[in-house]
Length: 493
Ligand SMILES: [Zn+2]
Image (cartoon, rainbow, N blue to C red; front, side):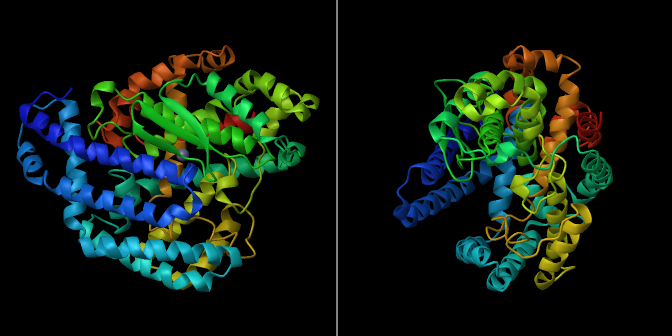
C-alpha cells in the first residue's frame, strides 16, 4: 500500500494520467474492433493528442518525483511506484520531442508502405523507411544512454534491465537444445507436421461457442471481462475491473482461434488479478512484456496444449464442430501440437517458435549496433532461417517483411516473446512443487492455478522489476533449462 504522504500526493496527481491511459486503451480497443473503417484519421489524431497530453502532465510530476527519491524507509509498493514513474520521466526527458515526432511520422508512413511492400514481396519499396527507422532508433539509444551494447537501451524499454549479455546467455543453450529436440521430433514422426483437421472448415457461431466454453474452463469473470473479434488478437486493459480480449475466426483450422482465445485470456488473468488497491496507480499493470508473455504462454501452451486440457475441451469440440466426432482426444492432442518448420512466426509451434525470435534478435542487434547494413538484412534473414529452422524463404514476404514491428519502430521488442516462453517454463516448474498440475487441470479446478499465480505474481502488478520479481518468486532469473526440460519431456518421452 502507498502510505508516505509525499508518495500519496504524487499518486493523487497521477490519477488524470491513469485516466488518459485508460482512455487510450479503450480508443485502441475500439479502433481494432468496432470503429468504422473510414474513421482511422480522426482516431489516430485523438490518440496522438491524448499521448501528448499525457507527456505534458507526466513531466509536471518530475520535481515531486525527484524529491521523493530522497525518501528512505519506503515500503516495496512505494519504491516500485517511484521506480515506474522515474522510468517514464527518464524517457520523456532524454528523448527530444523532435526525435519522438520523427519516429512517429516514419512509423505511420513506413507502415503504409510496408503493407504494400509485403503484398508485392518487394523489399526495395520498404528499404528507405527501414533505413530511416534504424537511424532514428540508433539516435534514440544514444539519447537514452546505455552500458555495453546500444541495443540494451532499446530492449530496456520493453524488459527492464535486460541486456544483450543476458539474452545471449539465455539463447545460446536454448538454440542448441531446441535444435536437437526438433531434429529428433521430425525424424520420429510421432508429432505430425500436418493434420487433416487443419483443412476442416467451421462456422463462426459454432467456434464462438467453443471459445466461450474455453473461457468457462478458465473461469474468466462475467462482469469485468469480455471477448470480441479482431484480425490480430490482443488484450486491452482499461482498468483492473475492465479487461477485454479479442480472438479471430478464419473459418478453418480451429486451433488458431481456440489458442488465440486461451493466449489472450492468459494476459487478461494477469491484468485482472492485480491487487485492487493499486487501481489508478502506475503499478496497476504487468511488470514487463516478457513477464506478461510468460502468463499468456503458460495458459496457452503449458496448460492449454496439455492432454488434460484437451480432455476438458473435447466434449465442447464434439458438440459444436461435427467433424471432430471422428477424431479421438489423442488425435486432437497431436493436431494442436503438430511440429512444422515454417516461414511464418505467428504460425510457429512450440519447438520452432524461438528460432524465429533468435534470428530477429540477431539482426536487430547488428542493425542497431551499426554492424550491418539494412541492404544485407534480407539475405541474412534467409541464411539464419535455413540454419535454425531448416527452411529457406524464397521471397521477402515470407521473410523479413512478415512482421509489423520494424515499420512501427519496435526494435528491442522481439526477445520478450522468447523470454516469455522461458519464464513460462520457470513458472511451470515452480507451480508443480505446490500443485499436482495434471490432476488440477483434469478436474477442471483451474481457479487453483489462478490463485497460485495471483499470490506469487499477479497481485504485485509492476511493483517489482522483472528481475527482482523472478528472484523473489522463482529464486532465479531467465533460466531456460525449465523450458527445455518441459519440451524434452513433452516431445521426446
Ligand atoms: Zn501475447
